[in-house]
Image (cartoon, rainbow, N blue to C red; front, top):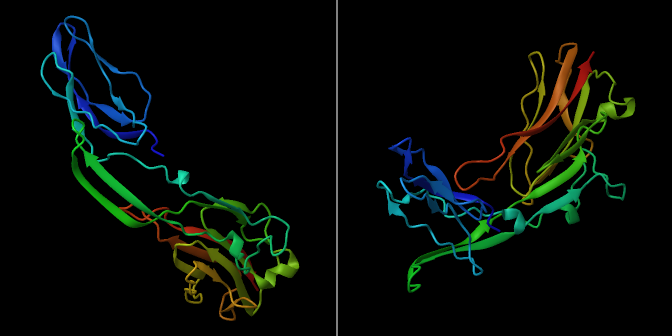
Length: 279
């Protein structure tokens, strides 16, 4: 579960061209099968391992090198990361919403069926540190409620347009009721009803709006269910279009997810869109 992870750097001197030179630091890894670093000396070169392998019980021995002097093996400088965790080894949910088996395929405005919704798994992460010699414990803590999410959805963007297969982390699909009977090309006059489906177990924000020459209707922020699902009301979400100028417009569905790497929000904004003409 621990992929190759940089845990710090090795600083060292090397004998080059008859003089000692302080070299650029090299990365020190966990679980990266790379050869040892060769440090040139006046005599035989030194071979210094720069990768640590977790043992069969999962323990990682942090390098302890403090030989930043001429002829030494260098000094290990911790980088703050003890190891990275490949969370897909714990949860990796893959769903195909395009299959032709009712209630699928999913179209904009349809709810994501319960069997295709995420289980929202929660894990407990435990950390322990101990001395290499004697194995005396020096510290431990736990995080009992760590939510990990790896979802992968295949679905149809703006289903009334061609070439719309999407493979993304959330589901964001939008359409217009008035375009469905004309193959996506009906000009609109006074009515527009937006169809949309947005889903992710950690859906944070959602916006439905029209882009085009002013004035345009205000942005709508649909409610998001506790399970992370938001769909348009029966018959579609109405937008007043009588005041729109005769022109081309774009209906947008945008939103963000409440996912972080522990420090910052991930992924930015997801969206789908479909254009229409107002006559």
